[in-house]
Structure formats: C-alpha cells, structure tokens
Image 1 (tube, rainbow, N blue to C red):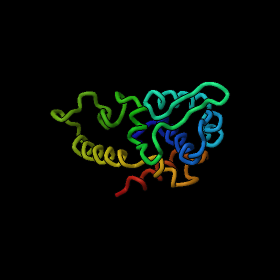
Image 2: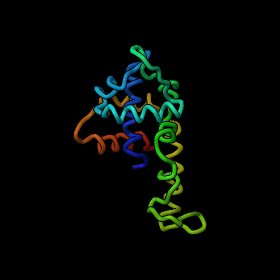
Image 3: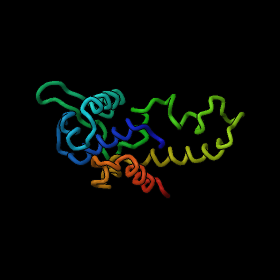
Image 4: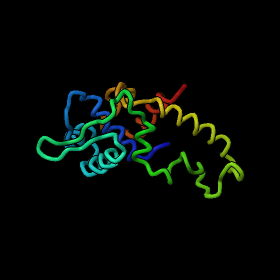
Length: 159
C-alpha cells in the first residue's frame, strides 16, 4: 500500500466531515462511532491533521474539530503529507527497502517505481475526500476493510 494504516484511518475519519457538512464541530466520539476507528487513534490522527491545518480544534462542551478545507478541495496527497512520516514513505524510499538506492545507483525496480510513484502522486494530488466519500458505504467498518479499501482505491487511481 502506498500509504500507512494511519493515513487510511485519517481518510475514513475525514469522510465523516464530508458526510456531515452541516456539523459545526465534530467530536472524536462521533467519528469513532461511524468509522470504527478507536477514540485514542482518532484523537492522535486529529492532532496531526490540526498541525497540518486540515482541522481546527476547540475545547469545551460545544467544542470539537472542524474542517479548515472543504472536502472538495482536500486532496489525499495533503492528508498523506500531514499524517505519514516522509522518512518512511514509499514516496521517498526505495520500494525494495534498499538504503543506497538512488538515481545513480538504482535497484532493479528503481526506473519502474520512479515512474509509477510520480503517476500515483499526480492522482493523489487531484483525488479529494469528496471523491472518496462518493463511494458511499465502502468505508464503513468491517472484516475485509483494508483489502476492500485497497480495491476501491485502485478503482479511483486507474486511468
């Protein structure tokens, strides 16, 4: 997978905002209930998204989290950049895990991966949370969640 499990959970949590556009502030409990992601995990993800200026947060009984970017303009690439550690990302490292793989000393998959990586980045830069939310119930919690999500993402990224 091109992004981490944490990033997948972030996308699922942000779909909640797309599905509830009239909500002024959303609690971690609300998102947890609908996405199946644990409250502590959602809280940590939301902290990263707040640092990345994707969400804002407010304390208190009427507080919660709010989107700073409309779902139709919030790209998957921006979410990945806010949540995933770039030093461990498949976008910056060798696909085979080799430490010394680069343009001058390429691994056997380097030329293939470099082209594929650029194409994936281009698609992630235009695919939005609103696009993914339009897939409907595909992101509800369930046993086959990760493989099913991957299949849906392949459909989004196919050209």
